[in-house]
Length: 467
Ligand SMILES: O=C(O)CCC(=O)C(=O)O
Ligand SMILES: [Fe+2]
Image 1 (cartoon, protein in one colour):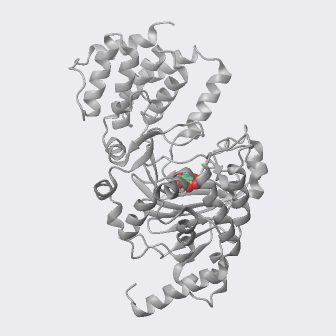
Image 2 (cartoon, helix red, strand yellow):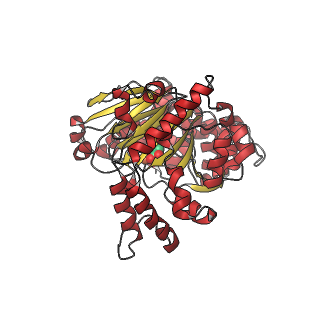
Image 3 (spheres, rainbow, N blue to C red):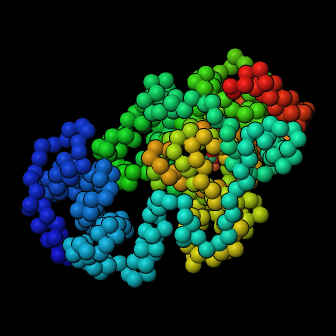
């Protein structure tokens, strides 16, 4: 490796004070100083942790980005280094000579095709803040918006068509009396701090990203604390933390006590979970809920999101937006032919050269605001991006009249030990519970049950008009 880019860094180093070793809750400036000390002492790998933490705490600081890039070059991680220099050049409008010099140096280590791929990926990966589909050249429509009042009105046939769950929609005014203060992070930590969560310090943008298993309290603590060094071996330079909390039976009940009041079409699983898995068998119920990610709270920073995918099990889902806004791109199963495989197409900003069929897509793109809900039927592709810092939502999986056959088929396959590819590896007891479910789902009068529940809500409203 030639030395010139590092001379640039050496000059930067020389002008900075060295400082004492690690202390918790350091500012980005302190983290950067510490990184420089470590790099000067030749501990590049260790210093990367601190450079990345500094960048995480001050993502717009182009000096930190540049120094991180230089150190990544030193450990021969050229792809990452390139993304730092590109970011720094972008932030400074190309007016920062040091970065431009480093970029030129770096290009010498890469062949032109590799370089072009890195640049394209960097553009596509950059978290954009608005919902403007500026990089989209395929057809996107906005999702139908239905108000809860219209849905509760039996004479409103248009709204009634959405009730059964065969079409995607955004639902408004169904969360008007939720106590959203219960979802402020201090309140969540106070009430659910020891609950177990999957913690993704670096987003869920690809299928291969693996989470840490953590307690909600420490995940939220790390999330809010700019000292990213706690992430040890993870490159946590981007503030794209996503926490996925698979909610167990009691925590879901507790969320209800704290003012989560879901409309009837999203609560039909309450009717059968106890019956299938045993009212007093918490372990069996939780096994079902957690293994299938049946009910979740998703807590994410701006820019975090989930890659384009279809849910397993051919289930439907709803999501209630309790804090911030989330952008969704939804495509029906008919678009599978244009979407390659999960995670391939970034539907917010597709690489049409690499995935040309994406040009033929005809999908939905919608921003769900605080207090709104979104629903999608089975086999819908979806990709998300959080638009606010912090964004939080509650999601639930649903069995409906239209998807019960598909879900039963998927679960039966999961319970068949002769199948080679299985996802959940359910135990015998869980499968015995599921067998009960298939019967219940088969016998259930879906439309009538729902109509009865809706009537109940209307009747309650008539008694308590303030609802
Ligand atoms: O909320 C998100 O970011 C994505 C959630 C999701 O894909 C799901 O619940 O299946
Ligand atoms: Fe999903």
